[in-house]
Image 1: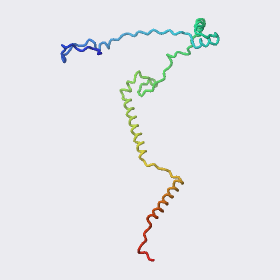
Image 2: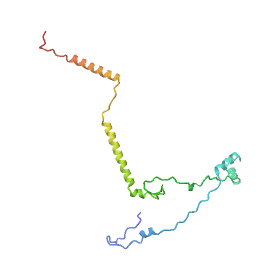
Image 3: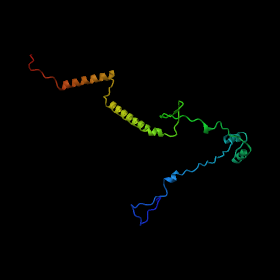
Image 4: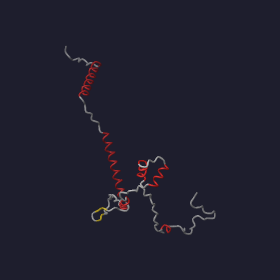
Amino acid sequence: PAAQDLPPPSYEYGRPTPADPKGAGELMRWSGHQASKKEVLDPRYFEALNHQAVTKGGVSSVKQLAAFRGTHQAPMIVPHDTRHRPKTPVRHTGHEQAAGVEGRPSSPFTVVITNHFGAESQQDMIDNYRRHRDEREECLKPMKVKMTKAARNKITEASQQRRCQQQLVNPAPEKPWKMR
């Protein structure tokens, strides 16, 4: 289903049409703020009330608990108003300072306009490519293996055995000019 119906068969495409009554003017009309109704919370502290019902009142059923709640009170104790607690300051890269204290911007438009996010992203990409290049160069370097005495002895024994086998297979030819 479409939001608007298709034009009738007699409609001529390309011909200018009258201006649409709906437009940007509707967006410019402001309606006043209407405060929402605040919920009135039950001022009783149910956790403490339930604890008292079990420990002091000997309550064991829901009906007994309802009767206990009707006759006893446990007021809610709020240590402080959480709505007005101080907000932690937000670090910002701009120069919004008043009396030496950094201000908190209402939106990150300054950061967007100054292309802070783009510069940060570009630096991240450069760092990633540099790290990748360094890792690749590190892998291409020949590995240096530290030899132990046992490994050195095995290598020398193997090379000596190989020489002996080559001498047995290919004995040195006698020199014909040698005098006897």
